[in-house]
Image 1 (cartoon, rainbow, N blue to C red):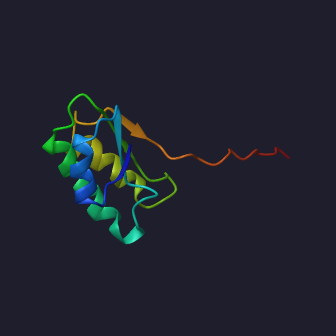
Image 2 (cartoon, rainbow, N blue to C red):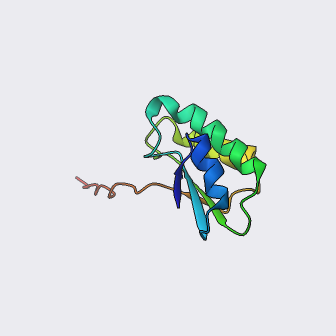
Amino acid sequence: MSVPASSERFLAKARGLPVDEVMLDLEDSVAPDAKAAARELAVAALLAGGWGEKLVAVRVNDVTTPWAYQDVIAVTEGAQGAVDTLILPQGERPRRRHLA
């Protein structure tokens, strides 16, 4: 179950859903101007607990964005031990370098 981390209502509802895993999404489902607030909501939701036996994952923004580093630091330091998995978005295919 993917939940936009920008929605307090969806974060609260996700705790009670009968699913194996919940992914708090900081990437696609969050508007650029809501990224910082979503990060704070995600950390607060993780610290609040109540996830039961669910696996709890957080999908961070792509490394090429200005938000990725802050996402990783906020989740790993701010909610230490509350996350089972960090999910990295699909990256682009590596570019081949031609040697001259």
